[in-house]
Amino acid sequence: MPRLKTKAGKYDNALQVGGIRTGTLDYPNAGGGPGCHVAWVDTGSGLRFTVALGRGGDIVDAVYNGTNLAYLTPNGLRPASPGVQRDDDWLRAWAGGLVTTCGPETIGAARIEDGKSVPLHGHYSNTPAALVGIVNPDPKRGKDEMSLSMVIRDSRMFGPVFEVRRTIRCRLGIPEIHLHDEVCNLGDTPVSHNWLYHVNLGYPLLDEGARLVYRGKAAALPFTGKAGSTAKLNGMKRVPASCGRHTGGGEDCVFIDPPADRKGLVHVGLVNARRRLGLELAYPKKQLPRLVNWQHFGATGGYVTGLEPFSGSLLGKDNDPCKLARATLGQGQKRKYDLTIRVLDGKAQADALMKHDGALVPVAEL
Image (spheres, helix red, strand yellow):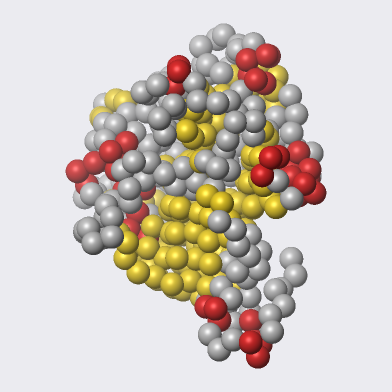
């Protein structure tokens, strides 16, 4: 993409046109505490977002030209705590946000697996990141890239020992986020490995009448041997008003096997035609072969949908016939993941994403 052309004589500090700053956000409100270490990223394109360095380098709030993109939970942004890494206590600490990473050992529901209790969505998002590098743009020297580099370690004595090296990159003047993760097993025995990006869209980007964009084989109730109806599955692609069945923990999920383009990339997202705004996810299918769309359209604020590309299993090796449910990382083995998040401004960009839309085809298992 082209470099942003700035008028060099019009500013003294590159942060005037975009860049990265770090600091601490108090919890729960200004003046509260303790705080969470964060990085504020301004792409200079209208897209601004907050990276929670204190929570694995996940992306929390995100705004484009004054319009919020992400769902935020009532919990607020809390510091990481080992005390919420059991059962479904993840829900007490979850801030929501544009990207919550789940794993690296297990994802999905809390359960007993291999004789031990594993928590909802794993430990990653409740583990601090060590910030190892910041690159700010310098447009006067022809450098428009900005980046954050982090190391996150999820470990215990006797294993497993996971190390994640995360880089978030943006280019000045372009409303895109490029996230790259490298997950390595530093322990001396093979370990289970599952990885999921929980991309949470919220109001006002997410609103009644917006269109979810994806296609392929799909199952509303995976692994039951019963295929959902064509009408039901495809009806889930149109965002509804708040609905009573999503009161409390009510929710719907559709599991999709989306096709890749000629470059091996999957393109999914959401288009809000009334706001002439959309959001696209692009990622290599070989890295993240599975996709789930989680929907919780609550009546009193819990209005959210999650687009969640993943590798592994949300239901665990005992309930999922897919071989990915038993994926492991050997000693010293690494696995890489890439995710691009792109804001779509205007009809032309939305139409380009809609070329990847299509019907869902019901299947009994996925």
